[in-house]
Length: 395
Image (tube, rainbow, N blue to C red; front, side, top):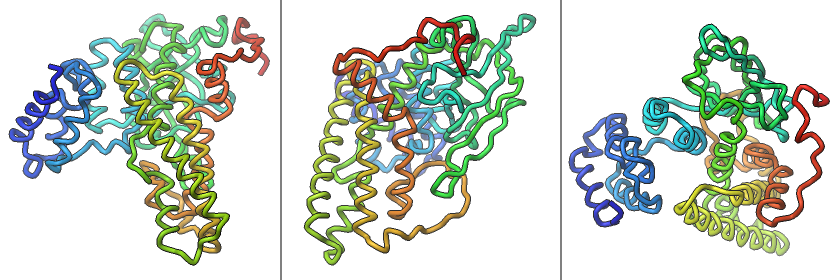
């Protein structure tokens, strides 16, 4: 089935059989997944129908018009944007059927155990070790991860660990799915400049992961991780938003509602950033159209790079526009939120929280290198450690 009219009819029939007004939310979401209307480009039996990604808009429009519940995508963004495409691309059939349905419905939250205190921008230098227990076939994992969003609410984690220190850093890594409720997994909050602890650090002490929870071949974790990272940058920088959505919206509203705050200089800066935000929004639409025909590429890195710069510049302009009001901050209470809400908070929060945009999801410095090398075709920087065994690297 590739016809939009047929898919629209199918969605309407689904709604007739599962009226949103009288169907329990969880029941509705599970039924939607089973009907192939979750992500239509996924294979049949895995929440999709094997049709072009572009047809998802047909389904979403019908469901939204009917007042159907969604799966709260902001709360489960790591699962939807990073874990799901990786499981689909590298998981076994058993893994796909076990993980994808509860991931999409939001029954199980996911987090990402990638960055480490000594391996952030240089992720391939990670030192968390996974050693095979020959008797059971399980992997015993020890190490520390950091900057882990949603670790305090997650049931599962995507994890990369070093399985062969004799290999160069990019080649001795293996990719796993880690149960966050297992013994030896300790999650500690990391309080941020906002006062909240949205991120966490995770300590892994003799955590036992069955080989059945390995994604991809042993030693090929870096290859698997590239799928995760490319999708992560698209999900962060390429979100679908309306005109004046995102960070530019509150600033534009304040400008219209508060004429006494206006100055010529602020007007010039606002117009420049408004145009930049609109260009970024339309570029994101173009990127999503390109995804219909293939997998995310380095363009997502460029989008995420622009997303960070824009958020920081726009939030800085908003604080300056509001003057003394911009210096206020509503609440320094220590909380461990389930999601980030940029537009539902005050200007002070947006200004402080946006500072993390140039770090999370790949630092801006790393993304500049990716754009330079993979988009512009410029020579890569000299790397003297590419062929050196990880155990011999200076640390």
